[in-house]
Length: 324
Picture 1 (tube, rainbow, N blue to C red):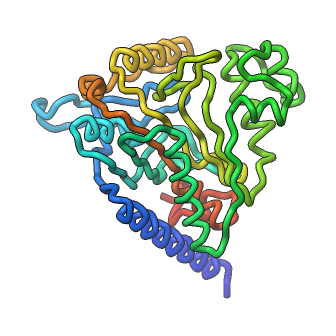
Picture 2 (picture 1 turned 180 degrees about the vertical axis):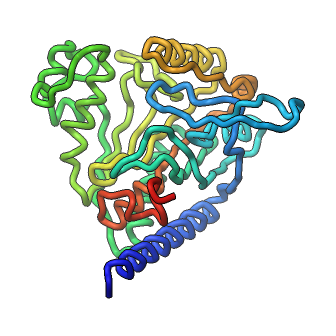
């Protein structure tokens, strides 16, 4: 078999593996009564997160159609929450999302995301369903992973001997001294993120599902903050081996607080010289009606990479970005 034929065979196998995973996902949620939905890919609002860049395009039709500039979604989160606020109940979407500037061996600007919501659940209950889904995916290939569930604070204490809540900035920087990272513009949460990505994640065993929960309140994103000493963000992240697969929240349903967070995001964007992004006013208009719920987004390519045992995202795509 020549090299071209081998490449074709590998791509065909990757497509069959993806089709099998998608069928499993749909069966998994059908058994649990979670409704599959589709929401818009183009929106009049963007993602304000300073660490995520969106693609935008311009609509050339009649002005009565609404805002001319439209943003390709970075996740289906906002329209799904609008459906939940309208009383739809448990739902999920499996579809394409887009993030500008994220291209390389492990990233593709266009990728697939599974996002689902459970009404009446918190993040801790949802993280166990996420574990069940990943275990079911592994079982398709005759595999099963051990599971470690640990709080964010305990992980740092056990592995680095650092308290991420109270350690001074110089203590957070010390384990990263050999990486040549300049301190300019980096705050406490930036150093914590670097410790996670450089010192902790690479050591997660490949045959283990690691779930980290209850983050510092400063890393709340769209999660609720649980009062206490210290206050904690009610969110989790799930890893298969060293790769983050999923990010979940006990969802915030306070429109005023969410508006304040979006506004702070745009302030950070200004400070970094990035363009401000229009807020999702349609979401903010109904967020107070969002029922108590938890939601999670899972990157399908990352899961497929884990199933295939590869570190290269190109090996789980029909055509990576450079060939699209």
